Length: 273
Image (cartoon, rainbow, N blue to C red; front, side, top):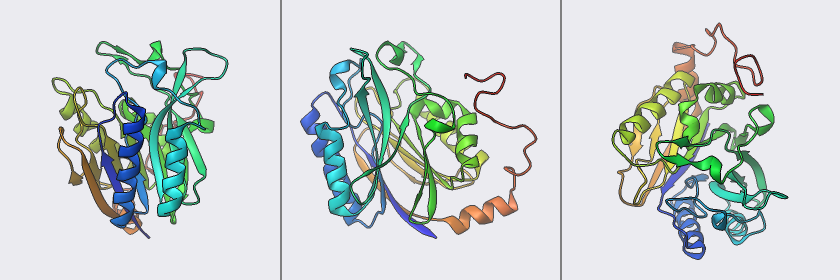
């Protein structure tokens, strides 16, 4: 089974209208280039050096409505990152990875579990974390291919990717607004390659470019080799065709997933519950 995909590397800002236009144009260009699955970065709906509740909008807001509309018009699947206000908690939001189907309906959501409270940034000042566990994992069959979704800082937590692989993921989409800084690109490349290799799955990184963000979107094969890569500064659109026969071949020759002796179980000792 082959799945044509596209990754849009773009730079969002606090201008919601401009962000919608960037996202919609990226989806249209990707679809017209043959993609069946299009990934937009984390915070595609709105980004600022310091996050604030003004960047959040509900599921009925213009960003999500526009993503649903363009997905239906172009008949494609779309993954996109947004911030949603938390009902009953003024000033609090959640980081949501939205999956929209070609029928224009929301097919699934993942609320970011691991908040980036590091290197002088505190997402938890604004965001409520998603619940760790199977109920908040997103794995969806798309065109006959099992696709899992994760977000940015999740890359530093390999147990989450094991759970996606256990959910059948042959392809893992990671949306990101990875912070720039000394050594950060090298860390991003190392982590994405490791997560692909250890789970013998394709990994798609849709990452924001622009000031303060690392860019470097990429498509990695099930052995962690880069197939497509973008630079760090400019918008880009990466296309590729992913073949599940390659996943099967790698998993047969390197059956590390079946050789595991430790289990990763949500809520088990040593993990948040």
